[in-house]
Length: 151
Image (tube, rainbow, N blue to C red):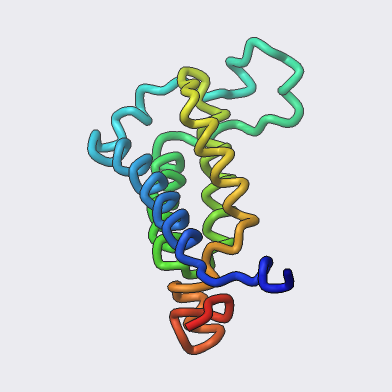
């Protein structure tokens, strides 16, 4: 009964980490292939054009195109960091916050799969998916297998 809870392999976490990294890089690629033209055409929230006045005191002004393009480019950096497993939790938390900021400030875009990406980003911030086969595992233990995997 004691062996029931012993972890034999972290392979499923590695696969999930790579799937999430693919989703992050795909979202970046969708904007990059159009030279960020979809960013220019979006209607972003501002305290001056909001119809709802309850948000005036806590919603900051959304940055213009260059700053929003920099935010989206940071997604790609986070995606690569997640894929190789370097500073995994920091990269997932950064992506989650930046994606949420971008998504909730874009008033003209509400897609259901973006809610899924927000949920994945928040939940994968807490999952230890970089325990093996990652740069973090190599830096911590000197082996890509990490401490959680048995030979």
